[in-house]
Length: 212
Image (cartoon, rainbow, N blue to C red; front, side, top):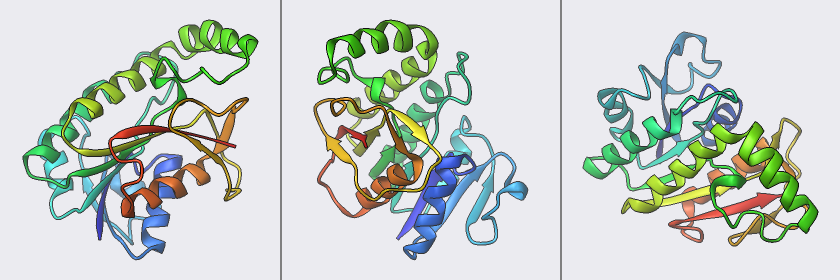
């Protein structure tokens, strides 16, 4: 299997790349600066922008599925997902693979906090989602809308805060809302979940919440 990865140079993207290689999958990664990518010797790298339709099409060529670890790099308004995900999904519909697993976040849907205690729900909704994380959350909402409106076979894992700690190997999965009192999960666990979705249709065409 060959996997096209967007956002491979980020922390989660590198974990995804490592896991693909460990599973024996071929990897094609679109990178702004391929020469600095730590895994460049083991993958097919293309230099280009995630906002360039031609570069996206070249990355998709010959791939069987797509992994996206794209996302906001700061708390500012960046519109990365708003601009890139429509281009990627359009290219996939035109010529590419039909399966995409795209990293999301717990604030992408209005039902995300339904299983939280009332006090925590209020704090996160009013002091986090609408203030500190206003723009990253808006981007995740846009990503979910783009994926759900497409005919593609998509899955969007929606974790809360990501940590750089080792994987625990066990975590809660809920298709309805963030698990009660769920506040964090390691990038490594999320990467493992995303890789597993390459060979299952269990969570096809839906978002799914992950948390310790």
